[in-house]
Length: 294
Image (cartoon, rainbow, N blue to C red):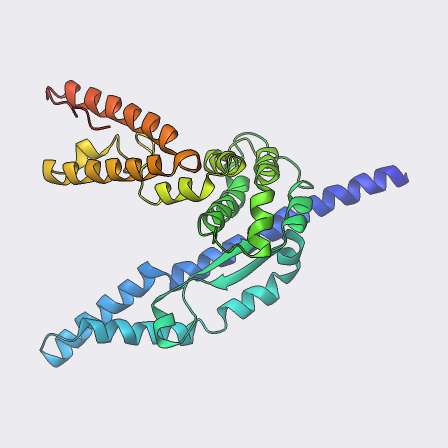
């Protein structure tokens, strides 16, 4: 009987945890929808148009933007505190914290706008992530909160100060493999490829340079964004030349770093992108090559 009770209690704990975490994500999404860039842009345009109609002259767009930033900050002042109070239990359980992202409001001394979450206690996060009942394949609705959490962690790692990492940043880097495994265990629909790359290159001592290259948009695969394989279909030749010139510049800079650089991996990836781009051109009857770019 005691064993059955423990199993039942564990099941209830897991269900409660997933539901509580889903509630946190829903509230976070609602806040960011109302105080994010899109919402503020809509408010700026509305203020701009109203002023144009009422005053009969072209208003100052910069002034309108500043007013909206301040108004949004005042409106959202209690948002962060409310989320922390309401969801403090699940935040502590997951080892997470919430904070305002850098926004226009910060220019006016008012932390406001979108709120993001990050892991601040890696051990607590791993303990809790490993206790979650794995999701069944196709449970998209249930897995969505964990997709958002995964994205938050990817973003957190990508902004690591590699020259002077904080204790928390060092903890995140040292546990990347375990974090990847935790997400793989949670759900088969979670795409951990980016985090896996982070773990791989960290293990090789190259993560700083991998992320520096990532910020140039050079690791994107065909159809996975606007990466090297896709440039050829969406920009004019002049801009295409500029894009590839920058890619070559980045490759050369990585070659100069020797073993600490990611030149070998980047060259392999760029050559594959050139092959895909050339094939795309041939299908639409364009006989164009990229020459000996790299």
